[in-house]
Image (cartoon, rainbow, N blue to C red):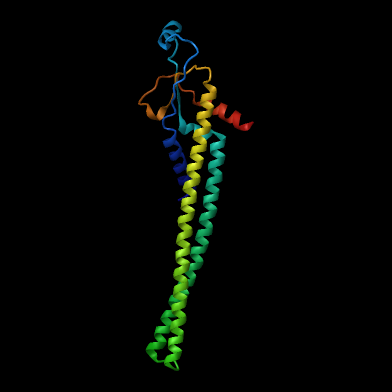
Length: 207
């Protein structure tokens, strides 16, 4: 999995969890929203955001994703180094097994006890290699689990951050609904507040 693939996975997870960023806010005015709209001739009290754009331009999301990907890449390098080292040991062992078999077939051993001693050593090495292979697989699974947990934590953090900002921004009740455009088949111009949200999120994060 390359760096771009990891980023895509994180973005996809974030989009899934933020797919419905809508909530109802009781407006300060007691007049029905439709009356306000009809009287003012303005847009409905609804806003739309593009979470894909937010995740790509929100500084917290970009920095956190870069950090997570760097950690993932470092883990993969360490895992690959251990795997290559183990493979060299396996190759060496296999060659020693071949040499042992050739000696047995040619009667090169001085005595039966000598052959059995060499065989026992090979069996001991085989057990050690099997244990190392199991340790490597356990490490691979642990790294995968850790990465998925970090992805989940990052997704939750970004979701909480965006939702908290939307509540703060909409504390005056100007919008009755704030929707993720991923759930919309079509949208009219004038409802998208994505740029405003990104600017506000980054300003808050910079503080």
